[in-house]
Amino acid sequence: KAGVTQTPRYLIKTRGQQVTLSCSPISGHRSVSWYQQTPGQGLQFLFEYFSETQRNKGNFPGRFSGRQFSNSRSEMNVSTLELGDSALYLCASSLGSTGSTEAFFGQGTRLTVV
Amino acid sequence: DQQVKQNSPSLSVQEGRISILNCDYTNSMFDYFLWYKKYPAEGPTFLISISSIKDKNEDGRFTVFLNKSAKHLSLHIVPSQPGDSAVYFCAASGGLGGGYQKVTFGTGTKLQVIP
Image 1 (tube, rainbow over the protein chains, first blue to last red):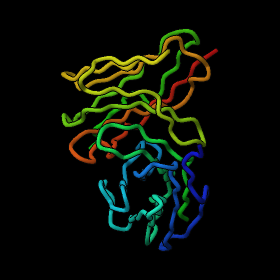
Image 2: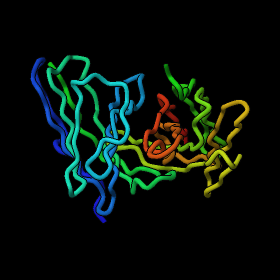
Image 3: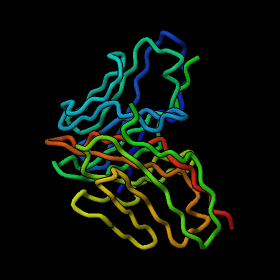
Image 4: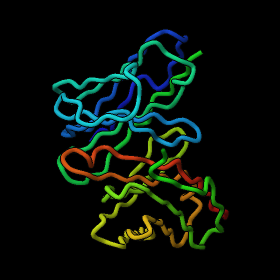
């Protein structure tokens, strides 16, 4: 069973540009969550999508957005990039049913904003 | 506001001894807690979890203890092995509906097991 796949693995962008990251969840998983990891801040929850709807949202500005497709694949978009957006962006998938399920993480996309 | 806190950024333990990683939380709505392990250049991997209706959960060498009154949980690894060297993240979730999918992570503790 294939794991969570994130593309691309590495990305370098310039301030002011926008970027789109992609995540393919484990087959059968309907929930996809996105996290930002920066040194000293741990993993910060961005948002969670379930059945193409944003179900949970963290405390990030509107420049951070996402969507989920009918096949559960998800994309995350960051517009007007700032230097502080440089981070490892992790995607996690889970069954998403109400109740407590652990998530399976991808390897992440390392974004560098210069 | 860091709702899940791991106050020890690093920990060194001799191989064969016990590793104890600690975690404190402030949000009383949290009722499900997880530990993840992360190696460099990889995503976090689920290790063990505990529901608030329990105070202990064991899986092989890993045991998680939950003290709800103190809003504290700990992960015990016995015996510690060099392959356990990684960053360990404590995480918490809870609430109604899809709240379990909104997971709050701590900042991590880097464990080094010395051979």
